[in-house]
Image (cartoon, rainbow, N blue to C red; front, side, top):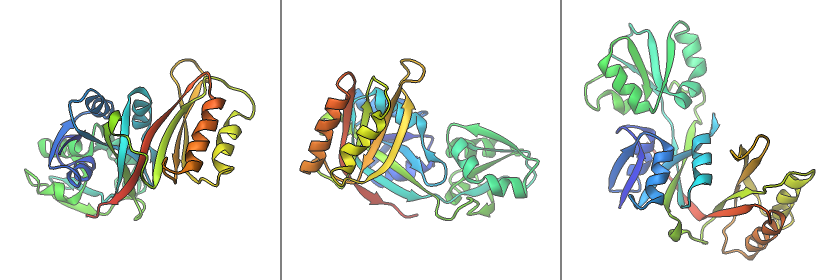
Length: 270
């Protein structure tokens, strides 16, 4: 199976994709990955959806709302950040914005004078560090010897040891499944009135369906107009979930509801 994920090689997305695919290709953005799965260029795509420290990845949320794809699995992997450089004489730390945020306390305590540069991925930061001795990177420790050697100045610099990232394994919409322990729904009400969100939540609560994540995102249509992302701990094969979706469809009659499918969880350890 082939898959596409965030590049270049060596990103945490690459590690997650390698656990489920034989051949991994790369794109520079989450949006490009989801488009590639939607248009049939790739069988699978792997995108980050949520980090245990920094929360949801908004680019992923927005791109999922714009394209018709299915979630066929979630992949959870621990995040181990190391500080990598040619030497300890560096001026700038370059990494993905989420990695910089996940190591905020460490950097402020140990390198308060260093500049911070957000780049497209942790692996892109490692490339910058290989090219420029004035730049350090944040990435998995194995990136130090993957190509031109870098020095590991410190390991496990993430602010919380429990740091983990959740990835979605995406497939074309036709492969959506109703079987699995979790389901992701996107709901666009196209209306706004007091109690709207309560009505949506009650459709689940009244049927004893637990919500593991609720997010609101701007619809992009007009200011103050939102859509909602729901992760529910139940599969669409269950009658109670089908009933909840049917009720929500009546509530958002002027909008839409998108079922991304039901799926199970794969844990990857490094």
